[in-house]
Amino acid sequence: MKKVRYFRLALIVIIFGLTWPSCQKASTGAAEAPAEEESVPKAVTLTVEALKSANIRIEPAAFRVAGQTIKAVGEIEFNAKTYSHITSRSAGRIEEVFAFPGDRVKKGQVLHNFYSPDYLSLQAEFIQASERRRRLSADDAEQATAKALLDSVRRRLLVLGVGEEELAELEKIRIIQPLLSVRAPFSGSILESSAIVGDYVEFGVVLFKMADLSTLWAHTHIYEKDLPFVRPGCLVRVRVAALPGDEFPGRLLLVGDLVDEKTRTVEGRAEVPNPAGKLKPGMYIEADIVAPSDRRALFVPAAAVQDYENKKVVFVRSGEGTFSLREVSTGEAQNGFVEIRSGLKEGESVVTGGSFLLKSEMLKKSLGEDEP
Image (cartoon, rainbow, N blue to C red):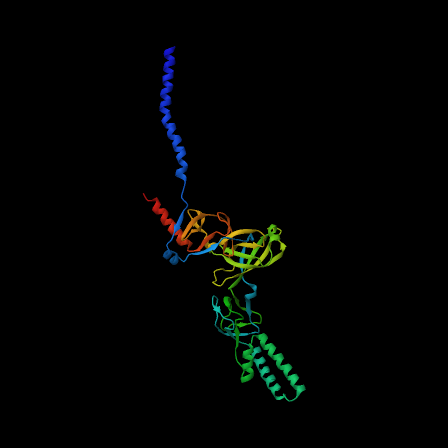
């Protein structure tokens, strides 16, 4: 029995001796692991010359009133204020056509010349009424009658599409013009045209459809639950699938009075400038409507926020010529500013101009540190 006990005791001592070094190593490794995970804050230091050439600009993070963003969908429409059907104002024959679908025309530009018997007879009446008024200038009673007759003919010519300058010229030279020039009522694009040389057209026939596309309407569908927050005058940011990354700002003009029973939405209308002509009527849109709010939040200029290693970061001035990389959590974007939900404090100076250069320097530094 003693031999058995001695044997067991010796076996325990051997096992303990074998496992002790590994336990010691595991314990040492566990203690050293945090030291390996510690990282030095990433920063970039530029020389005075580099600072000048980089054109670094700095602005403080500051609190602003943060509007509530309402999501909506819709489509782009013509601005009805600058959309027109140009119709024949009397029966007659088209003699010349100068504008065609796709053309951009200026206000007052001649679209086509038109032979109209009504135009010829009204010119003759106008010349006669003008001469009568001149002859009877000494008689006050007859002068009033002559003036009334002349004004009547003048108004009918204006309705026909004759301009004031053309009337002044007609009164001066007293020569009947054979063709009526039909002009563009405003600057814009010709969308459709049915004017063909030689065609005889009746009164009221649509000859041209034209629109000024420099300003369009965004027709939005606002959910019933969002109505308490939305009102005319709110900022609207429009996006279209055809132009990823582009936003088109506008203003909400109208919030409708009726709720659609099926979709539970109300129509909204926003006016959106379109100077470059990128937006096209008929495009489907996503819209952010920025509703008024009393909430205040920390904001920085949008140019300060960069993407780095799949994170949102900013560069914070931490010393003379030194800029530290700071990860941030972002929120709403509005009016060229981005909300910062965490990672920054009010008053901290962030780089708004030249941050891309700092990001490039940081990437170079990271690659250098990774090299063996």
